[in-house]
Image (cartoon, rainbow, N blue to C red; front, side, top):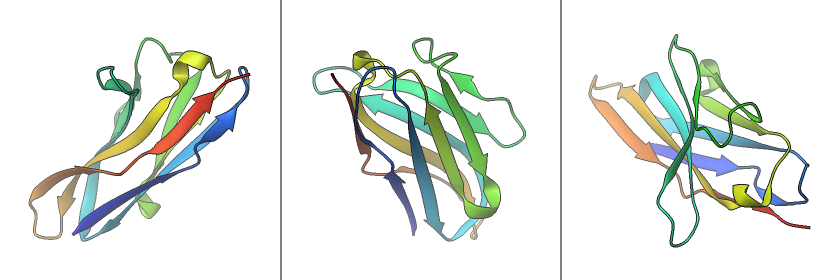
Length: 120
């Protein structure tokens, strides 16, 4: 089994920063992709950022230049540094991982999410 747990969300004012963490645990042999998505009730899921092994990060247009994704493969952890937050960034942020398990099967899963609220 693989579990994903996000943390770091909260209530901040516009212009402030937050750092989200995503920790994957379980029988992971090698991580392939770690990604952040967000979703607000009544709206479609939106890709925030992805980072693949040995690849460059990719960002959604609305967060380009403000958010930075990084990962620590030794810890199976991804981070999302969010700067200059705006009210429209308010959403449930969740982490999706794609990994090769010890069984050598490829597996995709995601966590329950962490709420980010940007409001004055």
